[in-house]
Image: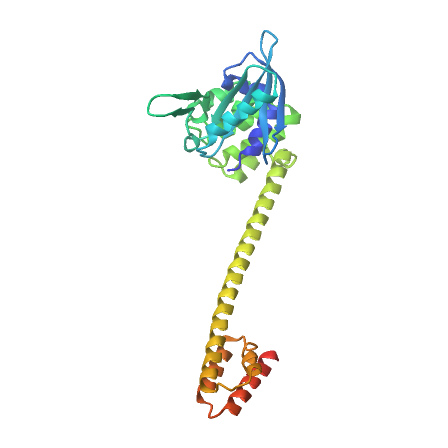
Length: 311
């Protein structure tokens, strides 16, 4: 289940709906930012710029986590350190939202030696499977409704109610994208065809999220095919090198046998042996040389084999 793009879009569309998960339901969303990090191939997205009741603006990083990553807490620590050095807003907060139990790598990063000197970092986490979907799909919070298939005891009926909730309360501008995001999280609970019948194909066809996901899937499939092709070509090249080495060894054996029988044979005839690059032809030439009665016959055999190899 690919969740990065849907979760980023959900944050951009309904950032205020996520504030209860972050423990700041009364804050005001000023903006949702994506920052390009220097010397990195990734960007820092789902960064909320919020305004507290006293008017102070601060930052809150949401780390959506949909796979097990042993380095997650170190990565979040790195993001916070970078923000602390490059942004003036204070405080700088972070919350990890785990999608499923197998993604959960904890909330605490500790570094101690022999129980002595060290430090400890604890980051607030939200475990979606611990939340109740009925509450999500009956509230005015559309983001939680979209996330409800990931919550405790979610069933096909949860998806139906969530979709109906989005259709009833979502703005026309957001409905298609919210339903597309819901369809991603609903995959384990409901067949895609059933979901399409539930919300209408037209609603999903206008979603930019599905278009981007489809493009990403095509790109990934193309990359996988190219990787398989490259691996096959590499294997073929390796086999070709192995075969050439084996043929080269056979050619040296034929040269040694020839010199052992006829030490005075011209060097040019020995070089002609190298023109015979087919393993079976080299083997046949070796047998013929062993049976040849004289040097003239051997020279003819080598010349004839080189000529046939060149044809």
